[in-house]
Length: 387
Image (cartoon, rainbow, N blue to C red; front, top):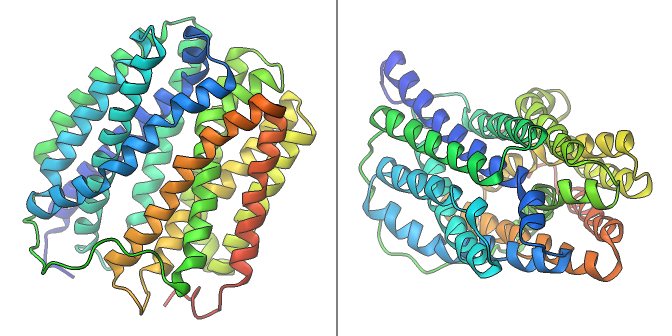
């Protein structure tokens, strides 16, 4: 362990945690107002699905640029750039009056989100080196806690009929102020110059199972971000405040899952936890589809939130021990495949919903819970060991 004073490393950890909070609060604030923006621009499900497609495209196309930036500059500096850009763009959606304006905004919003999220994770990895115990999952727990807080504020804004434009503008400005306040406390590490390596590598046969598990989980997670509120309004026929509350239920469950996941792994092991995650996702979505009532759908959303909470952190922890690829290559390959779940599935939900209805669309997404169960069953005990 690096010989760093406890107070000093705690300060760095706190600052990094604040940037995770900023990321989670901003993104969930946007997600909480998607139904409002759909109504504002008079979009049907297929149109909304196509519009939402712009965000993950911007995210995916920016990955090589972000990697190059992190190679030449401190993650602290890139983190500030990403945070400011991300929150400036967050101020815009409520003011859009045409579909093309929202599409352009979401493309750059996705790009800024990629720069922000990759840099805060790079910052977290650097701070992790100061600790003998794992602290990475806690950072993701902070993101989820912030997501819950952002969703709760969104619920209050919708309940009190606060315009989307004012809501997101206030959040964006406040998050920029927080970024500027905590930037000086962040860790300023020098970029490590490494020999040039070959370009992106797809997961090999050993890592393909991990990549599919990650893909399935991220597909379900982003579907809930983009469609949970709309499903509650269109399929459950609930009010806008109730739909926003449903998203809050989902975020609370995810937050609880991330702060309790490590203890559960200690009790029953990674493989059983991942299997349970798949069962919860499958069962939660099926409950929401087969029993589309307010109370039962709340229960279903809570199950899905618990289900997706620990999948990606646990998959990353296992893949990082790969013998066929180094840790960086393994995580890059798996996370890129995982982001394809973000990219492809939520817009596809819109097209399925337009054709046969949202309940059928959510039923299709439930199949990814079954995929997780199937892939976890193929994992060997040596792959899921904690050592």
